[in-house]
Image (tube, rainbow, N blue to C red; front, side):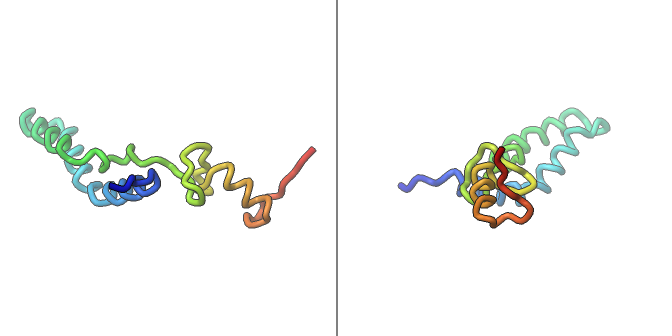
Length: 101
């Protein structure tokens, strides 16, 4: 059995989140609706718990699109600081100039 990389797991999680987003939102709205009976809200809670864990948006990890590195991630550029520096040094990122003093 081949080991699945963390990058592939994260891609699979993104797909699961996209598929389950509507279901999760509907169940959460039902749970928070105070006008419903406690039994209906509890049933919705159980249904939410039955959904796959990877369908939750909080399970997605921000990863560098170049290297897959999970730490030191710049959201705006969608890459890690190391990849940004390497691409900046080679002049592949517009507007970034290496400076030294």
